[in-house]
Length: 301
Image (cartoon, rainbow, N blue to C red; front, side):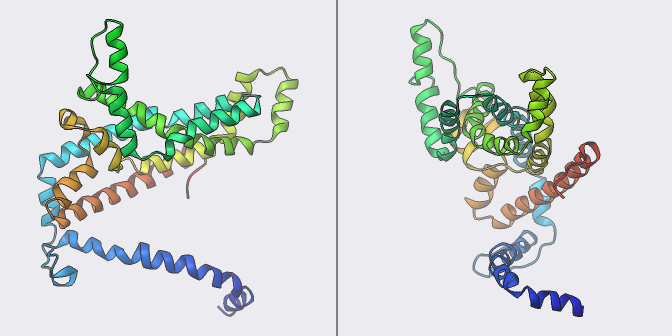
């Protein structure tokens, strides 16, 4: 203990610098966590957390008895799994292809154009989608009409909506994710490529045998984090892109919480659903991390 205090005393400047971030997390991240108590209360806004009556697990029983909750949970899993299958590999493929581009100027412009959609809010993207994919007035269907093809209900048929939802998600996020993989590729020893070229390896062989193994730890870490969030989904994307015609697919946990918990001021229910999501997310994160460490030797922790 004496040595520990001596070590801290010698490096007190570093610990002073650490005080700011620690205080931030304690005040703004851990402090508000007491709010999860209202998941076990019949919360009254005027009585507050300390004055509201305790109801045990009654709120959770109410949530798990609602068919709308299971529908939202199913859609959340479905959309996130589809994103995992189609959106997750997209930045990896883009990074591999961009890495093979030799013209630096073209590569820079392409990369800039690819990650620009990341800076657009989902409200703006929703407006663009209406202009492009609306059944009667969208640019795509107007062009199809000129070609004598019947309009396609991209936004009002649930199966077409699902494809559109995934495609727009890839367009919005793939470019930004590519930056992470390009940074990982930049860290690979260039002598490996030179040695492979001497051995007669082509671009595909070098990509398969050097680049992919080189970025494997990054892929594994991001995959684990993605699996940990599989029961959670952002509010903006399904809410903005969704509509009444596709509620069977677009109603997810976040929109369910907003409509059932927030709009009706049922804060206990909204908190209970949020706590359920957090617990399932932790279990999935720990399980995927354990599996990844056993298979690849890499993990988040």
